Length: 272
Image (cartoon, rainbow, N blue to C red):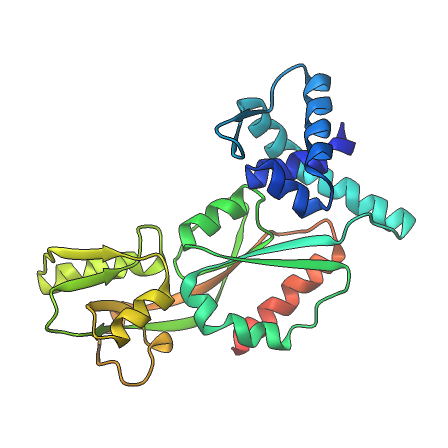
């Protein structure tokens, strides 16, 4: 069964056969055949097609993924240890929140010496989504800007971020991050403190776009001082608008390369 698990995992995490095939460097027909053989072994469907490309896991697929990922990773680690060979590079997926991507990740990557055995993939999304993906074994590490407690996941604070009120203060337009992001809560708190009920609120899930709008004189926003270019007006806020960035990791990893990478990331994040 586990000889088909690599294909199954790729389809489950990508929700797409074509993307899964690209991820594990095989043809889409090969992925489809392996999933079909796995379904035959189990006697049940693992995925239902929503459209031409997207699929949805069945309940059995959820159960197989949640139970099988850790076993599969340990089996791969043992194979690599015994044979000194691994058919695929070790995948390391890191979820990065918008502001941590802007503030710290470039400096960290500049100083990071990555093992040749590790294949790094970075995904920028909001903090809530990163915590969910860590819990579901869809990421190896996470950098978030929100204090989220996730069972089985370790959390290390590494940077204090200062939020400010920035932009065109005469504008009736507010540029806000989406619910689930680290800044969303602080924006709502700012509205309560100032007794504001903005009528024109634009949700934007990307810091860079918010900054470009502010630089063009469009609207106002609560945003990290660290990502604000010179020239955009801002006012400082009280200490309630200071927050911690957090590094998320699992207590243990099946490959020593990932454990070493965890330690190195913690070291670099604390100095950047």
